[in-house]
Length: 270
Image (spheres, rainbow, N blue to C red):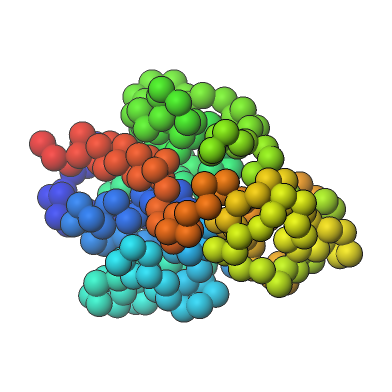
């Protein structure tokens, strides 16, 4: 496997949602500074306050002291690095991989399946969660399922299969997640950080009500005016009611970010 000094590595990340952001943030804290994230034109991240993909809409976003900016091309990525920022690029076809040639590529899309990541896309390719097989379509897989194996680095085989059940928070799983009752445009007068009662209307999808399944604080919510399909996650309610949790990276994301850092050090810290 090709190696270069740890301080010089370029890290590419497919996706810029909550999990990808946690990974990029943790690598940044470890002084890995040449990081770029590739996203679709209209990302559907519900935890927008802690998702670097918001830079696509706003131009820039700061998450726990780390700044990410929208970059249109290779020169924009390099300018972001020079200014001490993470670059976020709209590139659903991942065309910049051939131009930036990262030493590390992380698939953090969390699609529960492989959307096209290949072993030969970088000297070190890491896949997060189910859909990847270490040694076949990536070099290492990171377990993303909550529980005893969360954050383990898998060198052979795959992560646990998708359960379809959201992680438990405060004793709730499915009940805390807001989902679209049908296709249409999601609208909401509320914002992240708002306390809601059980049954309270959080928003609408083309006239169909979206109600809170439990009482708590809105930890994540799609942008009002977003086009959605039936069943898409619109947001989540945190029964713990802690406002600070809305703007900080989750324990799960930090654990997975630490596992990715371990994977990189296994190869480049020799």
